[in-house]
Every structure is written in structure tokens, then in C-alpha cells.
Image (cartoon, rainbow, N blue to C red; front, side, top):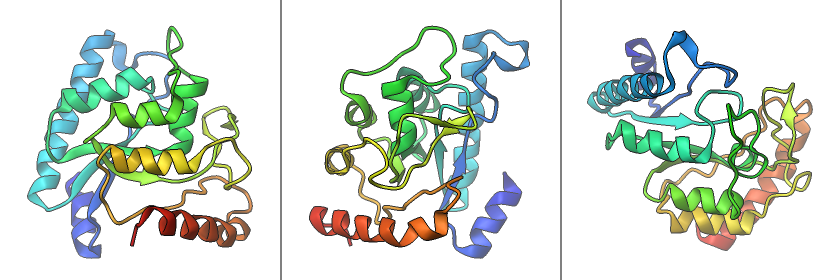
Length: 205
């Protein structure tokens, strides 16, 4: 963590992303579920304190490829960490795969009737970073969410943008995430045009 923070300070990076690392196939380390949950929360609380001392915000990007990917787990974790310098990085395609599809969830599947928008509202005041990208309801290599270019999926970005604002997201950045997309370079220009329209519509600078 200290090495990552040194790089952040040298490059003027204001946010550091973490994830749960382990796949959601079994509880890691031979621990029971609650012990595992508490251990991760404790580590992230400690990391958030270190980040705060360096002026860097710590954000957790949940996704179907890693442990703790049910909507209730994400909400519970951010409150369990309970640190003012810890928040959620909410990727729209991960939100869909976790809240609508219920992809790669350990045990009983959990979905939300209100989908991505409901998930965002459940995290009101706790979203510190966002990624905008579409979802076609599939996984990339059966691991993480497919990051489909805008228009190749099913997401309602007007509803998502309004939900982010209603949930208290105020950061200036509304980035595009084309992770793992094979023709990302070709998809970037039309994605930028799509986001320019969304930004203009919802008053982002």
C-alpha cells in the first residue's frame, strides 16, 4: 500500500482502487464467512487511514469476478469499513451483472427488482468513483463483466446518470471503461460522443 501511495503522490493521482482479489467460488483462507468479511473490512479500514494521511481516497470496485459481489454485501461492506476515506467505485456494467443477473454469486442468488438504479440508491453517500459502460448481460471469459460499448447492451444511462446525482456523487470525473473490449481504440471515439451528450444533459463540467 505504501508503495502504491508513493506512486499516487508522484503522479498526482487522487484515488486508489482496491478489490477483493479472490474469486467468488469459495471462502478464502479456510475462514468462515463472517471472519473473512470482518478481516477484509478491517484491512480496508487500515488502508483508508494510510491513504487519508497521503491525501488519497480509497475506492473499492466490486464486480462479479471477485468475492463479496452481492448488492447487500457491497452495502454492508462499505458500512462495515466505516471510514470517511473509503467509498465505492461503481461500474455500471458490474452493477448490472451483480444486481440484475446475479452473476457468480456464492450461495443463494441475490438480485434487485429495481436493478442498477436501486443498487445506486442503496449506496447513497457512499459512491466515490464511477465507470460508465454498457452491459449485454454476459461475462468476459466467464470471470468479470463484459464491458460492452454504449448501444451494444441494455443499460438506461439517463436513469443511471440521474441516480448517481441523486445518490450524492459530485466528483468531476465520469469516465468510460472499455476493459477487455477487443476493439477498444475503435470504440473510444463513439463512446466519447455518447458521454459528451450525457454530460451536457446532466450538467457535468
